[in-house]
View: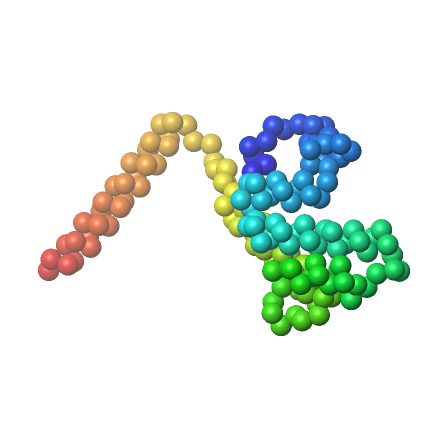
Length: 150
């Protein structure tokens, strides 16, 4: 996807910082969902995880996972394995599940990235290589057919 972006580091930094359109975690979550990089369940879970994290960050020492509001949000998480029962375990399990999904997306995008040819052929050299490859394939297929006829 980054190959489709204009190469402008200053603009990219502005988009990610301050009042830029991608400055918040919420906007990044929504963009990933809008681009179909994550599904609706992951989208909802990421927003829930963000809300839970913010509750703990802004009221430190006054909250626990047993708090009714936190517990209720943890009960809504979908990316956690059913083996996780308590709210803290559901939070951790969902976070780990989403990390796995993101890791798989990164791996998949790296594997699909187009590779630049390592050689610089002229048009004539390229045509010559194609003709030689076709001739080789033709000779091999003829040999296989001849062997089958005997």
